[in-house]
Amino acid sequence: MLDIPLWKRVVIWGVVALGLLLAAPNLFYGKVEGHNDAAALIERGAEPTGEIADALAQWPGALPSGLVNLGLDLRGGAHLLAEVHVEDVYAERMDGLWPEVRDVLRAERATIGTIRRQDSPPDELRVRISEPAQINRAAELVRDLAQPIVTLTGVGSSDIEVTTDGPDLIVRLSDAEKRATDDRTIQQSLEIIRRRVDEVGTREPTIQRQGEDRILIQVPGIGSAAELKALIGTTAKLTFNPVVNRTGDPDADPGPRNIILPSVDEPGEFYVLERTPVVSGEQLTDAQPTFDQNGIPAVNFRFNPSGARLFGDYTAENIGSPFAIVLDNEVISAPVIQSHIPGGSGIITGNFSVEESTQLAVLLRAGALPAEMTFLEERTIGPELGQDSIDAGRIACIVALGAVLLFMALSYGTFGMFANIALLLNVAMIFGILSLIGGTLTLPGIAGIVLTIGMAVDANVLVFERIREELKTARGPARAIEQGYARALSAIIDANITTFIVATILFTLGAGPVRGFAVTLGIGIMTSVFTAIFVTRLLIVTWFERRRPKTIEV
Image (tube, rainbow, N blue to C red; front, top):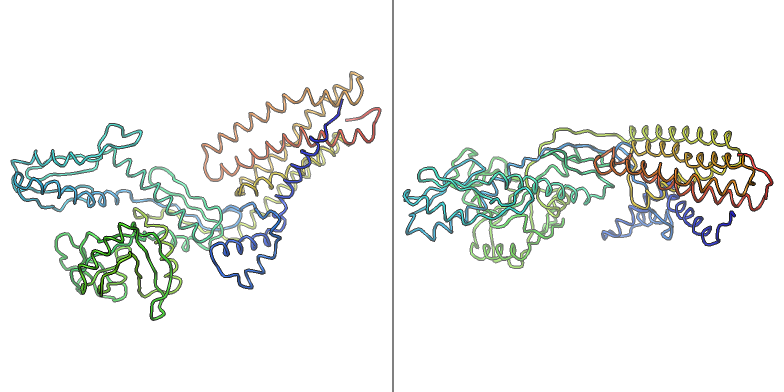
């Protein structure tokens, strides 16, 4: 009656062994972490030096090397809350729309007369025509440039609104387009921040949107909040602008559609540049740190085909003229074009250190942030505080585990010891699954494991109590064990499914620490059901087959 097929026994012990094997690297955390870091460096093309080779040899390559990543509260690191200035993108949209408006109005110059762009707020484009009587005709021409908005909330809306004010034509983004633009700006900022953080090899950062225009950034293992700000706080907006002239007066009038920017290498010097760049960093496809012909750190760059064509055409037409390389509104270099530069590649030189050239290359590869960010909150969590959290979590787990083991042993004797073995395997399997999926363990996650330890024996308690009841019917121990498991199964499934649903809701709707708790709780429920229904039963059946007791006490 208690027969379990051989294949099922092999599968059960195979799953347990796999879980223990996956969890094992966490017992040698430092060695495995060094091995993984060395392997990652080699994959990125680093030379296998003696130090890297030694780190690689600390853990056998044939064994699993996945680790449970430690969260910010356990490992230490940096925490930032940034506000994205989404309105900055509106001005860029208006500047980008101006060439199209200009071209469509110029085609009707005979009717509407001459056109001239006027000064206006950043989020609108104002154009004056010399024939005010034709302002409605001009408005119709510009309205034809409108595009439909492809979003669920903007269906049926256009991206621009065109109004008139005397001889002036005013173009603004529609409210629906502003909402869509804000959403795209935040999503693009999230992706670029994630790429920048991933470039430096940090583990399991938390980068997520909060509210309408804020981004939460938590990076375990990084030195300080200032270091993280230096990495992601730079807009890294690169442009190549024509140079109009130089001046020593920052308040000089640059002229219409021009800007005046300071020089990085020459303090006190300023460049007057055309506002519209020839090419921008958005057209870069690669950037790598290098050294120029004088051995000074620099950055190599390469454009995509469209950027390469624009760059090549401009250099061919302006030999002997200077052009400025502008990074975040500062002129880092203003070389004179010596010859045609085909192929779309070049080098950025400046007063860089090796670290600065490497960081600039990282920022350019990741792309420019679409808008400026203001950091509203910043915190550095030291490794010592993280170690205190680990120690507190370890003590909580040991106390909870010890109390449960003692309770089960005293309450159910031999059967309680079987439940205790299954509980220890359960905890190991939780860490094995976390290692397999690359999960991050946080302090709330440890709370989820502690709760799982308490809940894990619930299923065994239900089974053992049912066995006790069945023993009173004098059907014999084998029949009592079989009926105990059969009749307790539905209650076990129902109780754990409802808890698993709660964990799923917490993971779906929660963020940060709440998700960490939900992950460990959900994994713990699955492993608890497996160990209670299969592992504990297999232990009891194996013991019963060897001892063949006439009576049993639970």
